[in-house]
Image (cartoon, rainbow, N blue to C red):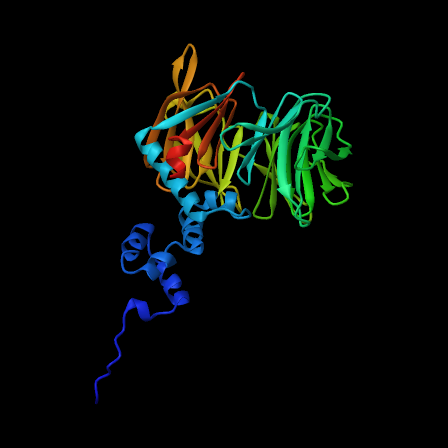
Length: 381
């Protein structure tokens, strides 16, 4: 048989096949491949590669940016900087001298409510837009979403028992009335808005017509927070009781019973993580609510029920000083509970604690602290 004279190399493969193969590799390996030729170097800069890697390795970062026109390599860099900062305890603290009742990160901006005011800020907390007298009384919650028409809408609720809907420049678009108690939390699923209130009900609204659809009244206790996941509505009431409904039929499925009252709950990787005022985070099965395991924390984490989960890591405030109260933040791997680092003595006592956009938001009585890795110049270069 005559030997073939064709020479085969990576350069002979089409771009589509190379990109498919590169998705099986890591960014470090892409860096080595980029030395092969200018063509390969251009391919490894392809945004789809970085997007695919972020989806796999940094799922929460991916969800935060998937609907925006973002540079995915930059999202990867910020996630890596954040993980490095956790290991080395190298954080910059940005302080906003204003107490924030609730915040949401959406498409490179943070949306905050404090007293009667709504503010739109950049990712480092600098104000871009604000509405000083958005409600007649304190605002407790805010939800931001983009509708099928492409328009961004901001939903707020609070002590005045109303839900108000705003456009991206904080012009009032509509008002929903019907609750007889303070509104404490909002969630959106499809074309429906869900609101939890002290009046013990969950009201459900059409977000196109802003009309009231129905309400859920099965849990006879003031409702504090809402979570919608896996086709279910989870509503946490005062005194630790949590009710569950089917999100389509609205059928009441029962309550979650744990040894300790539930004061904070997260749903992550089809598991329920819940905590009361103890040094234990209980992990429950999402289908039957049975206990799967318990994560034992330091006894110094007692006194606060707060924690958050982000990109496969659990973040838990940890008391360092009693007077004045000062907290560090312990970080664990969500799968094997392996310690990943401690962010030391940075945040004051926090009653609103969230990890978003590779930043940690700690809200105390009079200020909001944003912890980020390095400075903007470091992240952007």
